[in-house]
Length: 336
View 1 (spheres, helix red, strand yellow):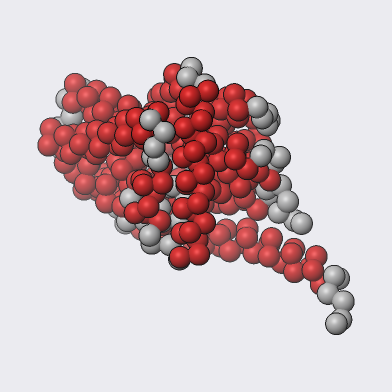
View 2 (tube, helix red, strand yellow):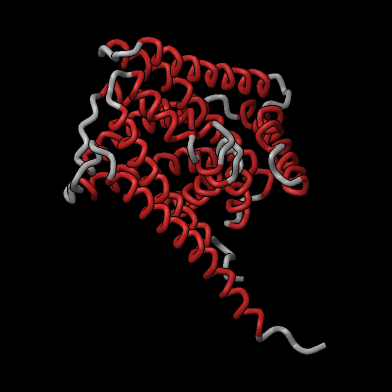
């Protein structure tokens, strides 16, 4: 058999390059198309405010740092320690994959567990840490959603019906959180049943592997809740801080494009983003835009305003997915 070792590094390099080049080309094309589409929208901002760009980037990185800090606390309670910077990269990578796999972002959790394992965390511990971190994130989402709706109504959001629809989605998420926590505390499977429906869209080979990861995460989650009862309140506090920072981040993002959005509608937009990402659609394509246009229209704004907001959010989503994919390509062991 002819020796193949000299060709292997070249092939690995080609694959590594494709991991970055293909998403970058696709993302660049998407950005161009969206920008051209936005040029036809009357309310699309005619300029970018350069001074607001570094503020927005700093806020996003601060949000990611809080996500990583929460993950770091969970890992520390389980007996592992990783630098905050690495956990930030792993979170961005998992978030990007979760957005691209049509699983309501759940597809990124096995990837995060794998990346933690590649960083030296035992496999069972990595699965448990990701499961608990995800549960804490859901806790913040489901507590923040009703709060957003309540504040928006108190501030005089124009459409009570629209707010109530958004609130219904948020309360549904809160009920799912209570179900996960209650079942885990009783030693019963919680994450695997929730993931079963979204994962049925995947090929059987992937689905079986992800089902096994979810079952292992369930067992680890049950053990963690029993062994570390104070971890949930601390993690929940970080999750709520992330929710508040996310609202500020949205305000600054709209300011980057010189678009003034009233606070009630910023809160509505935040709820809509969560709803769109909960739907098992790749990168929330269509669902993100539809929720934003629908909520802003029901909120009494012109259709063009909702379209402009949807385009801004799509631009930001594309950029951060590309950043996450770059982090994934640079993960530990990627060049081996």
